[in-house]
Amino acid sequence: MFRRTLRLVSTSTRRLAEYKRKENPSYNELAARIDPIVRTGESIDVKRARLVYQSRKRGILESDLLLSRFAKKHLHKFSYEELDEYDKLLDEPDWDIYYWATKNYDVTPLPDKWKNLKILSLLQADAENPDKEIMRMPDLH
Image (cartoon, rainbow, N blue to C red; front, top):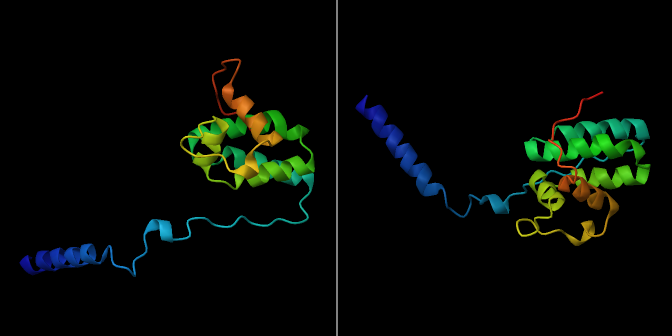
C-alpha cells in the first residue's frame, strides 16, 4: 500500500514538473478551431432546415435562445445568399456570436468582415427584444 501511494505521488510530481515544458504546447498554441464542412449542391430547403437545427443546438443556452428565435422569425424569408451569410456566421464561436448580437464589443470585438451586414443587424435588433417578451425556445414545427 505504501509503495502504491509513493508511486502515485511520484507520478503526479513528474507530470506536474513536465506540465510547462516547451514540448507541451499551451492551449493558445494549439489549433482550437475546426474548419467547417464545405457543403455543395444543397437545396435551399435542406440548407434552411440544417440552419434551423444548428441555430437551436449550439451548446450555450444564451446562443440557443437568440439564434433559434431568430431562425424561426427570419430564415423562411431569406434568399440563398442570405442563408449562406447566416451559415458563415454560425461557423463562429458561440460566445462571440452572443456578444456581437448583444453589442458587447468590449468582451469580443466585432471583426471587420461582420460590420454593416444585414444578417447581424437583424440578429442585433432581435436580441434587443423591444417588445420585452419572455424568451423561450420556439417549437420545432
